[in-house]
Image (tube, rainbow, N blue to C red; front, side, top):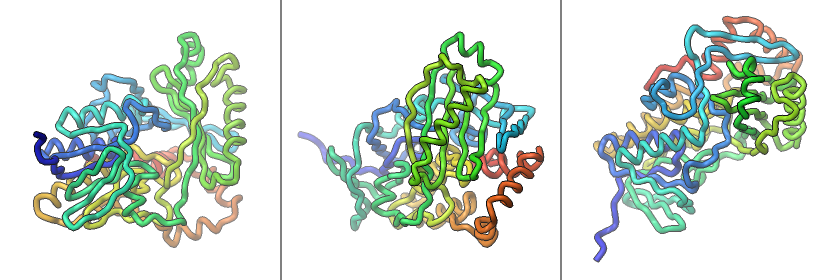
Length: 379
C-alpha cells in the first residue's frame, strides 16, 4: 500500500540558475523542496554565458575549482560607429561559461543537497488554494504552501499569478555557439582573450563575439524585434566578423537559435503574492540595456529562498522580498530622466554614447559597473 502523498514545503517551477539557487538554499535549510522543469537537463540554453564574480560568489562557487568550461576575462571591448574601446582590469572582472554545463551543475547540486528535482515535467496550471498553491502538470498535481516562479520569460507561475502587462518590453535575440577546431583556436588566439560587444547604430541593442574555453558564441539582441530586422542585423554581424578574420571563411558555425526575455524597463511584473514570488527572467529582472540576467536570477533566487523560509517559519509576507528586488534593480518604470532621454533626438543620444564609450572612467562606471552589474556585492 502506498503512503500518503508528499506535502512539499515549497515548489520551484524552473530549474535554471534562479530556480536551482532557490532550491539549493531551501533544501540546505531543511525545507522539503520540489523542482519542476519542462526540459531535460543538461539542456541547450541560448545565452552568451557571461557571469560576474558577484554571481559566482552568490552561488558560492570558486571559479578556480569549477570543474567545467570557464574562462576568466580581464578585458572587454566595446564597439560603436567604427571605433573600438577596450577596458582592462587587474584581475578577472567576468567569466565565460557554457549554460548547458553551468545550469546542470547548479541543478545537480540542488538535488544532492536534498531537493527533489523532476525534469521533463511541464507545468500546465498554477492556482492558489485555501491552504497554499496547487501546481498542475501532465504528470499530476503537486501542492505546497508556496511556489517560486523561476521558469523564465514565459514562466507558468508568472503567467498565472504575476499580472503580466501588454506594455512589457521584450528583447528578441539570436545566437550561435560553436566549438572551435584546434587549428582555428590557434589561428584566432588574438581574438579569444576578451569578449567584444558592438552597439547597433540605432541603439536598439547590441551584438557580441564571446570566446570561452575553446568555444565562441556570437549573437545579437534588439528591442522591438517585430519589425523583422533581426535576420538582417544578424547577417550584417556575420559579414563583419568574416571580414575582420574573427570568423574564418572555412569555419562552419552552429545554426543560430532564438530566444526572448523581458528587460526591467517598463510595465514591471507583480513580483509577489500571498503564496508566490518570482525570480530571474520570470520576474523580468534582466538588466536594462545589457540584458544580463544570470546575476539577477541567482541573487533573486537567494533572496526568494530566504523569504520563503521566513514565510514557512513565521508566516511573514513576501513584501520584504519585493522591496529588496526594487532596491537592487529598480521599479522597472522609467523615471523623469529616463523619459526625457527617450525623447531626445537620435543624433544627441549617439553623441552621448560616443562620449561615454570614449572615456575609460565612464565605461567602467556606467557600462560595466551599472549596466552589466560588475560592481554588485554578494548577498
